[in-house]
Length: 327
Image (cartoon, rainbow, N blue to C red; front, side):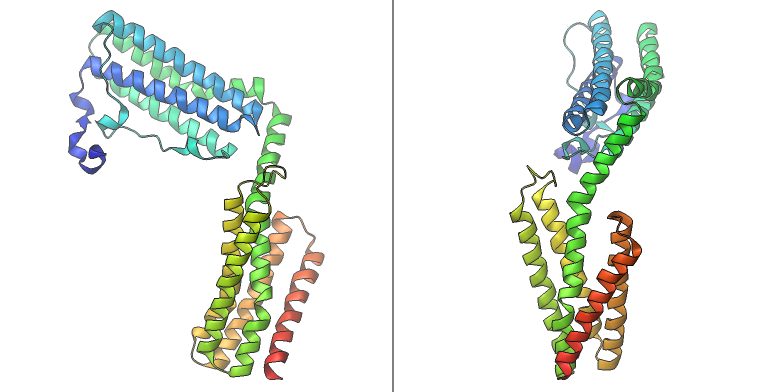
């Protein structure tokens, strides 16, 4: 904690002795080995073939760690100094992305590539700092090995994740994204946009007061968002349906519901009633078109059916609200 507040409490890389450089390399390999195993564990249930890639990467890091420890024992004995990457100023840090569940497949692969690039840079810098021939050779060899790790990942991928398996895993990831975020978010956006049309425009045309209309729209949007969010989170824990975290689904549904209602409530912050109403109606059709596009883009709903369901339905609710307001 102190090293985060006071950066000067960290050691500079140039101040490290050769023993400390070796110790830093050992601890870094240990950390990366654990990270790869976490990636494998995080992917194993949904993407078992890709998990085997990261199992292989973890084994490779463990082999590097063993080589470094053997060299340290020959040169400096069995006592390895306790020095880690967070103790060195300017040294790369690993963001705790491996704690995220479920792990996104494409993002995990990209993070692994970044890890290998950072490790290669470290070993090249470390090799230039040492004088001992054996140490320099090992560090240089490890730099080359890290640069070839992407080739290892490709080789392991060819063994464990052939093209048809990769396609299946990508389809699974897409489906999970749709079930956890798009589907509840779209349901919320539709509910917030359409269900609040009637009360907001009824209040607008009944009172002619933009401020009171805005307050009614604000309360309706927030209330609907809270209701939809809790309903989505409570009615399905995702264990049997595979729809993912109920908290994530609830947030997606609740936030999008609120946004859908606020879209045509916010224009009533404009004091002039005619201007506010014109802008609000224009926003309604933008919202309805956005819903139609999302249905077509992510849910593969044909344009004709999506337009009929959303535009026609929304227009009828809008008309009903206006007719009730002027009655």
